Image (cartoon, rainbow, N blue to C red; front, side, top):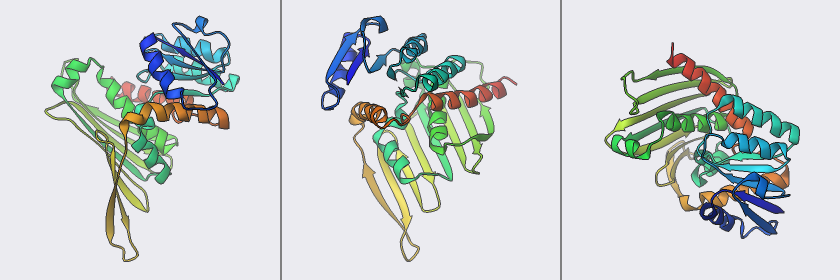
Length: 282
């Protein structure tokens, strides 16, 4: 398989290393733009610009399997075009949605197929939020995408409440989602905290799991034969996220399956985000 990597030389070389141990990859081509890679089987596009979905769409229309490395795009119309184009071209499209691709998340997905509820609390220290220079929506949409991906159903009900301070310097938001299965998700994100705190709690009929996102640990509670609750803990290496994501992308191509976070996952997330934004402006 011949892989093209589009992006700056420094970042492209780093991603080339993530492909090095895969026997199915026999050649890697690095270029600054899509026009420079020539005929390839798949592309890794490293592009955080506002026009990255345009580049992605061109690559999909050219018939390339694509992995876009960037913060999650928020343009609904462009995402819909990419989704439909990927379906028509029958290619794999994967986005670097790290909440989904992280090793701890992947382990949780495999152990709880259908959650009954998800609760997420993410507190970001206000000074750190200002230093990162990311829009407030970047944080809560990431968590929204995580829930919608895992629940894998129609979002039946959306409720939202947000701080109404007249400032662009973040704030706090609470989201409640109910899905067609009856499952629910609560998301609370604040950028006005004095500390960092990021936990995701998930439950189904057989277990409850609590993930400390920062250190990538998962605490699992299950009942034994005597109906007593007991706990165990799993630890994961966050530094392997990029390598694992590259492997998942190649596997999706080989097995002709959807990527862990696909064009459809993005399109479905942004449709719910659009509903939330409309409620916020009412």
